[in-house]
Image 1 (cartoon, rainbow, N blue to C red):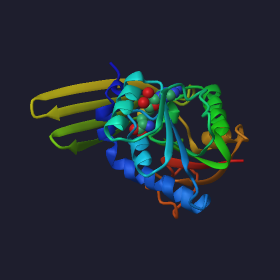
Image 2 (image 1 turned 180 degrees about the vertical axis):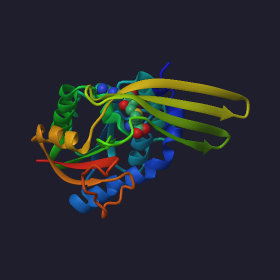
Image 3 (image 1 turned 45 degrees about the horizontal axis):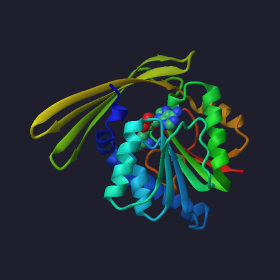
Image 4 (image 1 turned 30 degrees about the vertical axis):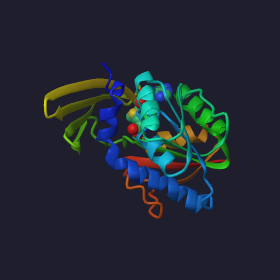
Length: 254
Ligand SMILES: C[S@@+](CC[C@H](N)C(=O)[O-])C[C@H]1O[C@@H](n2cnc3c(N)ncnc32)[C@H](O)[C@@H]1O
């Protein structure tokens, strides 16, 4: 069982972030591209909460994901909403968009699914090859500062109509030497007739601010322009240091 096979609940769990992330795409376009961004790429798009929102805002969107259920769900969702986007089952380590895009976006630590430096760099290179020169990659991930606790728990409830999803994210089993941790993703889904529990453990790569800097130094296709936090305020960039837990890197394709 894989929580990612149930994109309708995953999307519901994260729906509160969708508008902020899409607003940030608009803000990057306005501030850095004079409002001219038209093509957007989301690697690891899952059930497509952001793909749908960006397509609604008039962007030409491409979304890819390894998970077949998520891609099927998103394809139907776009049809249902009479929206168009290119969605494909593909690996973000190697996929390159046929038509170059203005902005790529990848949030909520999806990048940390890539467990080796080789995979992370291959991904950065394929995103760079998908971007127009002067385009931007918005890359959001949770950092694990050197003195941070190795175990962490976050939980919240999201509701839509008669369905509620109680999400718990447990991080444990971290090994700084191997650069991995386990992220246990649990959803307790309630509707008027049924309660269902879904849990999956994902192995994730961990990054400190310095490790992220060192990785980016090996990707000369990108220049680090600014770093933000998960409030996504375009006029409030943050210093990239060990105080930052939730980081959104704004990378320019040079
Ligand atoms: C944390 S979820 C985020 C989903 C979506 N971006 C969102 O914000 O709601 C991570 C997604 O990345 C996908 N994924 C993981 N590794 C991938 C890879 N190598 N290539 C493409 N998708 C991948 C998973 O299937 C999952 O749908």
